[in-house]
Image (cartoon, rainbow, N blue to C red; front, top):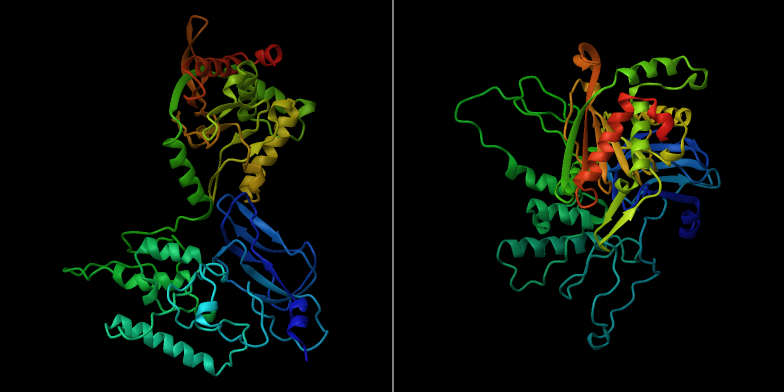
Length: 480
């Protein structure tokens, strides 16, 4: 018979990793394997979405998938086992793997020490379970030697004590044990005003889950029937999240993943950094002609050449001429941190929300290298393969709102950065050129900057330099 130790060695649990810096949870978007499938070390088993990006997770060992712990669409805390793999298939009867626990398994229940010998203060317990306020007997956990037949009786006794207390008849009964729930679930209950003692647990070993908390609050949120009948169709479980239902007057879309992180970051940026925005309208006719010439240049063959490429190069030239704009504000140390490198962020609209990956060390790249990096960045973002690392460490950003036909806007700084350049639509407009009104390609640029770091003079110089390069792109040669 397989021992507990053998089962522990045979079944390996792969836990949700922190694929970014300080992430606490991720949503399982798609499973690529099912129970019974053979997997190898490094094989991608699922795709998850964090607060920063969608990421594919590889399994770190060989074996056969024994169990998928969560369904697609479930948000899982970092450090929670999401898949179990049998790493020694065919070695014997496949018994269930031992339950994950942070406390050691004992052969027999140890007798309680006399009251005077019991240690005082907080004792180690399972993470998130807390410590009971009273000295009442707690329900045995898995892994102890308490007989299975005794567990229902203990559970019934605990439930009876809770019910008696709720009914006002529990004055003589011992205090009920603290409900079992992880910290994120406790926070959710607190935010929704739900008393965990009233929630019916559905998780293993009587643990309260997020769904249990939501189910407890759902009846209170149910709207009262209208006085006058009105044909309102509610969303059903079969409808996709956020999908419009025929006849419905409202649609609720869960805010999570990239969209949730973006919303939080933008609010933090708007109310932390003092924004200033300046505008300039530019004749970019010569730049548009240069774009067409570069498309036929042999050095640019196979590369993505468009106005954004030259706008990015113009901004890099302006930063080289005005390096003080490339900085960050260190609130903790009350210091201005000058960056001697430029990680150029490019805002990209994706089905999962707005993301801002950046081109590392863009200041050192030639025009062909910049074109290659820009093309790869855009393609990766559109395919949803942008990694968290690609979105970290940006110093300045470009957002091209012109692709949506918008003339300009007042962009919000990407958190931790000093400036962001918005590029409006390039349109044929009447323009005074060499003393005559002629149709010219014109656009409007908007530069937002952190006024703690960048004063009006510096911000104006940077914007004016970008405009000058786009108006006379030959300056790329002399200024770069």
